[in-house]
Image (cartoon, rainbow, N blue to C red):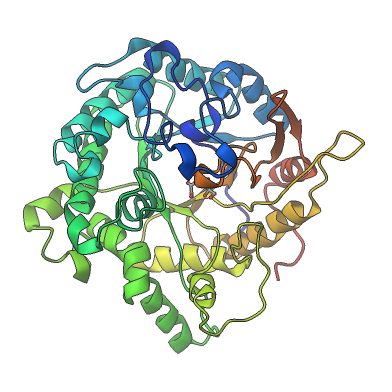
Length: 437
Ligand code: GCO
């Protein structure tokens, strides 16, 4: 079965990674604005791609790439720079962006939270303070009121695994706090409760019928073979085994099944689960590498594998299996909300950016995604990460993920060969791809 005619072929970004203008028009600092020396090469996100000023040019760039959708995030720091105070200038930026995207025929997909927590909120405990649920709901309500005339696709959170686990357990991400997971269950509960309440708020207040989901850092196990018992084992490893529970089940089971995973069985009661499991319309999967890749990196069954410049395993089968595992466990339509690869791209003397490995990556991963579509799994869209090179968190600007190259000195955007190749794939609606390997 081909991809649906309204399949949303798009690309993704996040406010903190591309906007810059870190203190413009009343915006307050985020925990990433003050990450300081935790970011490599002395980089920071204060200027990034200056999308805050260049957004009209960037919509034209998206139009030239033939994008049908664009997944962006709203900065809570622009919209609520102080507890309880909404900043009209911040809302106006995103309302203008959403309107212009729709006018350009590009479907806006709005992520309400993509890691850039206001410093004022973190100073009051961040996701560890139950009051954040009220702060977040007031913020989300203001965004829905301002944008829902043009935004129909809503994503509550991007990768809770990252901003809770890396931000508060391992300390690898802002706010760089390290405590055992057992001490962070109220962080998880606050985020899950905020998610469910936000789904209910969007459903009640959106001016146009909304499609609501969450974007998960979805990492699942590629089975050793396609024999049913191996597929069942891979599904168990992806959600039931401790690694799979921490990666996926701990969040998705309460949200989509209305029951806690074993690790959270004491942290969530029936009332909580009723709020958390407010029905969604889809699940977003951010897919980069298989869970096998992480285990390999720990040395188990280590095999020579293709890897990106960030050391992430490249194996297109992980996209098919993640879509299938999530569909078979949660029975929610799936949107690929992120998929892409980092490379140290450079401009050639001809002024172009030739990135054949990313074009091949697109063919491989979209080919495996197409297998899921051919098998009848409801697939809503594919948002490539990323629309343009941008601030890669603690890695700074070294790793480049964009379909467009950004010369950070001049802020010039140059569509890479992969961006032109993606435009061809979109024109063909994902048909005529080389055989997925
Ligand atoms: C993530 C984030 C993105 C990253 C991208 C590359 O999934 O980690 O959503 O912000 O930049 O994934 O690491």
